[in-house]
Image (tube, one colour):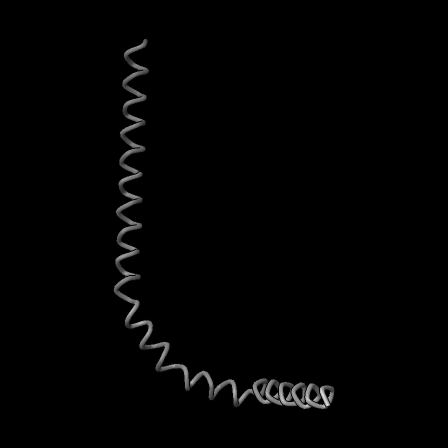
Length: 81
């Protein structure tokens, strides 16, 4: 009995996978998910924009610190000689 149930289960799973592998099913699934993905991107867009701004500001701050350290090192080298 258990073997029969497992065979039926495997058959159903294999048939579902075969249906999902068809190109037209894939295209239909993509079209079905397109509005959801577009809505998600619209909701996430401001956060992506803010993240990019923070990364740019962080880069500029680190670059400024690096330049200040280089200037400080040059000044200390001139004072020693």
